[in-house]
Picture (cartoon, rainbow, N blue to C red):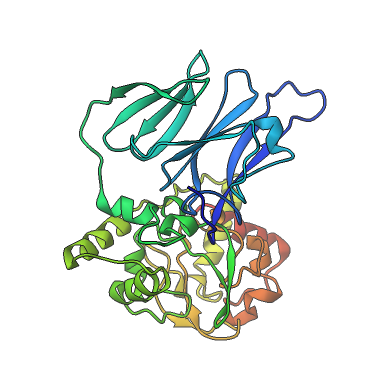
Length: 344
């Protein structure tokens, strides 16, 4: 069931502050250390009595149930060595779990992707009590499976670093090229080619050869499968645009952004807010102009993650006036510009 992997799952337990009446909250979080094929948790449920949690993982047909109190001193997800009161329930005969919950009698309810069904497991021993077939059209999609499941001996899936087609918020340090911030692949990534921070991959074929086949030791069975995966990947929706907290500040920031004297919109142009060019903006070498769509949710910033916030991007690691002529802007103008960026 358990394998050492590059990106694995963890669970964070947050206790209420003294005097607060909130129940204990458990949330899944990406970490180094985990369970199964090395992809992120997709759902978590807290038992009706608030004492236990059940976790299911993308690409893994295993459900883990654990007392929340145990998690505070023994996680188990990083080593797959669970305490006696924790249990891992194999669901190999039932399909891939995509959601989990509890009923009023504390039995576990597990939604399975294919065939679409709801599985009820006994609270006492985890044995299957019954299965309810779910109506509606099958949602089976080979490309979705390819993105989320680690196969052919791999210990990492695409979704390990790109959950829901977005990004994990991490900066990875590669031996040859150095630190690189995980980019999002949502919102029509194929329209931003060439790919990679240095623009070294001219098209999707080059990307799949380098990343999917070479780095991830993956396989594709046919050209049709390859093309279908490209269509599926390019259809992942971007994050919704945010409403500005200060509309006046955002309007002033938009004016600054489109001011030719600053040059922001020279490179960050078009529907995807990128010219797709590879440009040296004073950060060490030429890099791809990233799309600014949904940029507020993608901290840290820059190719190496040196800017922890959007304000920091206008600091020393941002490349100076080679990266937009912004050094003469006042702090208030930077605030306005950031307010606009947060709406993209």
